[in-house]
Amino acid sequence: MSTNSEIISSDIICSTFDVDNFSAVVSYVVESASSLKEKVGTHYKGPTVTLAATLPHLTRSQVASTNWKRTMIVLTMNKETRDGMTKDDVNALKNVHNDPRIQALTSVESSPLEPPYSNYYKFVVFRHPFTRMVSAWRNKLQLVDGNINKYFYKNYGIPIIKLTRGPQAEMQFLKNQNANLVTFQEFVIGIKNGIVDRHWMPQSEICQPCTVNYNHVGFFEYLNDDTNHILDQIGVKDEIVKADVVSPAGQTKSTTAVTQELFNALSQEDIDAMFEFYKRDFVLFGYEKDVNSPTFPYPSIPERQG
Image 1 (cartoon, rainbow, N blue to C red):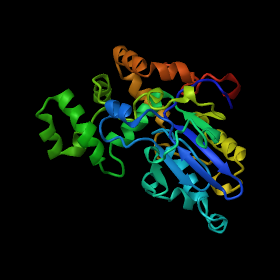
Image 2: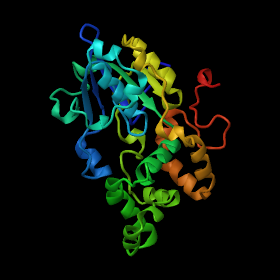
Image 3: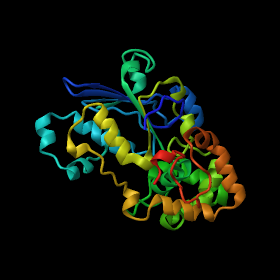
Image 4: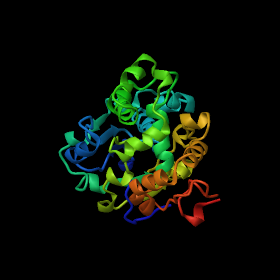
């Protein structure tokens, strides 16, 4: 699906594609670093530009940004190397968010709204606010491979625990971390009290899509179709980067099912509070609030449902 409508997303992919040398620039079109620091703390380093050799994308956290960065890194490789790779090789790429080919947009002199960036092929990918929120909680504040995320617990988990359980709860957590993880209910309370990171803040608060004329508007719920369409549009023929996407969470219990369980256990007051927090995302992206709807979590795009 392509559209020029003014939709806001937290993962915006701004890209340019040079067919001759298979090069691309991927950049985040987001608010200024100083503006975001006020919202998500001093750890925000600014938007990212990926100087990779093929595909570009402006990624928003918890919306397949890892998959896109893997794709872009692979496309920086020469054709002989790519031809010798399998999809397992692509999926095995680690630490892609710290790859040296990814730089802060603040280090680039030109504005993303001016040439050459304004001439790039641009696409944006959205995700249902509730499943994105649950994905962030599972990935950042629950055990992953048996371990906690120390950075997120130091900066977000412990503040949430102290807020919901009292100041003394920090010591109890430190004595037995795995038994005292942040619950989803506590996560909701934390959000209601302003404990927010870019991984779960509203997508419409991170990017500035209303000022960008996108070539393609995609949705996480149609990730394979949208990924393949975008790759076709920029001339990428390599089958190893064609979409066959399965998120880590999808290998266990689906985020959709977990989201339904968690939201059905919340009070109506908390559900309404989360809807209000993400209201602009819901309105702009065409998602519905009811997790028990037969079309959840798909956006309201009749021609693409089913």
